[in-house]
Length: 86
Figure 1 (cartoon, rainbow, N blue to C red):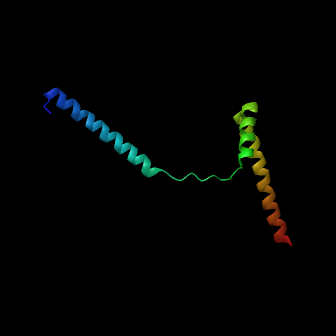
Figure 2 (cartoon, rainbow, N blue to C red):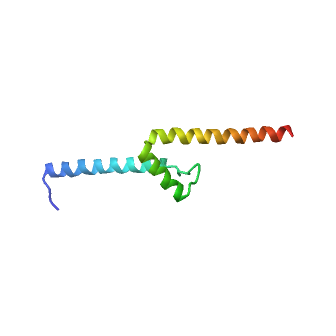
């Protein structure tokens, strides 16, 4: 294929940009980590959470869920303390 100097330069710049883009994609890929859920919720609970977020707003539901989880975890540490005392 024959090209004039301008076309050659445009192709060269395009190849350089594609190479930069590919390098960026490879870097992102290499930095990926597996996303492991902390708690595996069943489909019904997930559906109910989505409904609650739509009804009450995501921020409100996030605060409520964090409070519930914090309370549940405090029960676990209280249980451990009771077990140690026995």
